Amino acid sequence: MAAEAGVSTATVSQAVNGTGRISDATRRRVLEAATRLGWSPSASATALRRARTRTIALVVRRPTDVLGADPHFSELITGLEGELSPRGYGLLLHLVADMTQESTLYERLVAEGRIDGAVLTDARADDPRPRLLRGLGLPAVLLGAPAHGSAVPGVGLGQQGSGVREAVAHLLELGHTRVAYVAGPVELLHTRLRRTAFEEALAERGLRPVAVRHTDFTEEAAVAVTKDLLALPDRPTALVFPNDSMAVCGIGTAQRAGLRVPGDLSVVGYDNLPLGRWLHPRLTTVDQQVQRVGAAAALTLLARCGEDVSPAVLDGRPRLVVRESTGPLPTGA
Image (cartoon, rainbow, N blue to C red; front, side, top):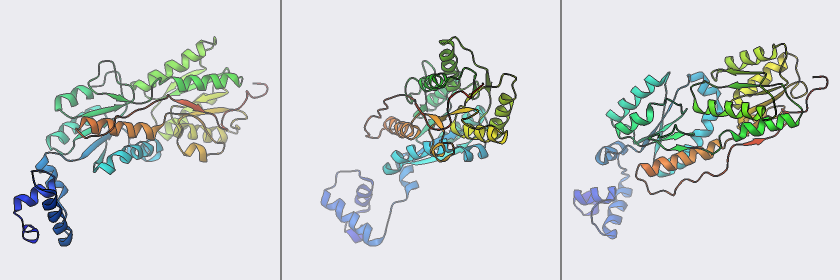
């Protein structure tokens, strides 16, 4: 290429890498020569020279089948990729079984020089990852509210409990007083925040939950917990789930048991994913703007990686979207 452009190899390097002090005319001549020759730079070689990979890790503690069945992560990845891809960054997805595997993976990826940053999911009160990544010198962001004093900034909507509070208020207005809550794993911060909001919203009206059940996010867990709640002597007339996928499983389980939704049972989900609009009845759910949060997380992380990007701004809070899966208290309930 140097001969084609009539310059030295050093000048070629400066032109294609955007470094050095060469004139615009010389840089243009080199790039035109590259086009004529059909040459393109090796991404891996460029990354090695610059000690940058332009790759962001997204590590998720979920079984493969659960991840594939949960559209939440598709929405999240869409938001992340919408900001990463135009800037030449790629997303490296890894699934792990537990926190130990996740921590070991970060150490290996950093030691091998394979990533420039990480997006952390599933914030928890005793989260060791922020301190680990700070020690590794790896830029990171955490989806959701981090624990107090965290070394990693959190990205998410404020007032995390507000959507659950709106859901409870909505059900109470419809006449429901026997409401049960299906919560996620107890160690997750958002599980604690939402459960607290749910119980406080009922307590303010002098009520208590019919039941609160902690489960994982699998289809099997959603079906089992719904059957369990519907078998209670004082059966709830409304169920609130921690995500839309589990709410859909809950609706199906109730319908197979001969119950009408919302005629006999009202159901509320969380996430406002597209599947809730395709369902019949359409799902009442809490919108936490998953794609927007993903995009904001990407921009925040890119800035921490040294990229010149506009600051990420997330306004608003989780809000209830009322559709067809909630209705008035059944007659005679």
